[in-house]
Image (cartoon, rainbow, N blue to C red; front, side, top):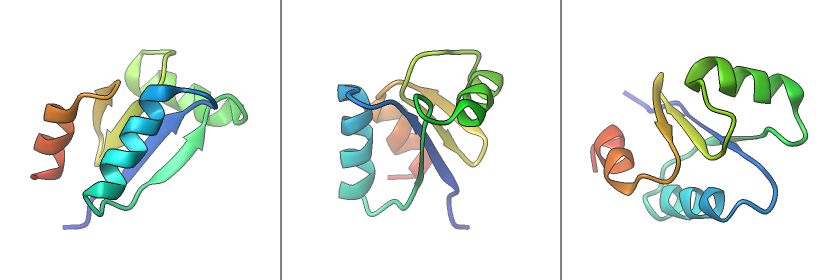
Length: 78
């Protein structure tokens, strides 16, 4: 089953960059939503996660807060 990955980010966020690099390095395609430019995405992120900080990663409904490499590997079955 293909993983649906959404990464909620903000401009200038170093941890968001790490998440993007990790996903690219592992050939995981994802959609990025910049919560600083997209109010709807920001509200969606807070509704899903309860957090206002980025990055927030949604992998098939599993929410990962921040760049947590172990949780990402587990969610992606790496």
